[in-house]
Image (tube, rainbow, N blue to C red; front, side, top):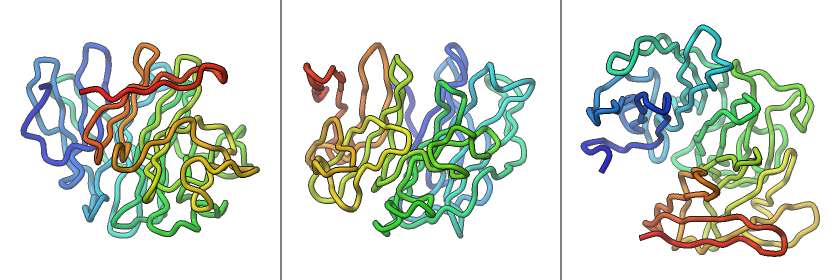
Length: 279
């Protein structure tokens, strides 16, 4: 047991190998600091968070140290009264005394709903910020290139469109997602994502720039031209995948409805992918 007494913890981000860990509390909008000693303290409340259903204060991220410059920032994905958005806040202090500065939005206007809000954010090995966004209850958005919903997004640290994004002048990195949440990179820098299915299959996807992952045309493995099938799929009763981490050559995936932790070892085309449920 690393921490107890939390209320609806949703995301964590480490500030350094020997530093504190920040935890987002979805419903209250509070950022909680877990000190290396194990003690918990409130760092602050992210403004404008409105919790309803699956919405609230969701993902947290910090930029890589080599790209942070002289300033330190905490990024947050949150639901407001009108939208889902990403903000960043100056981070001052040190372990045991961290405090948040004023929140400045870097992305606004993403459709929200009582479910399918996505909400995971993370900086990739390329220094860009990635965000998972659900379809907000309207499946057609996932195939609409003009909508940011049902997508995985890629942006600079200030929310601008990177020049090498797969779609010109667009934050969209991949599309055709229902409610992606977990994202992580393997040792080769390849991005992977876990996605909530509807009634049949949850997915573990290898994310390619500009790739279309099928929703709502298919759920799970569909074998349709132009659509990318998941590397692995689970019955929704076994998974409902949320958090995803890559450690020592293995992905660890937290399954909410399945109430278990999956270990996933992606193989080659010849050896396939092995999975196991951890007790």
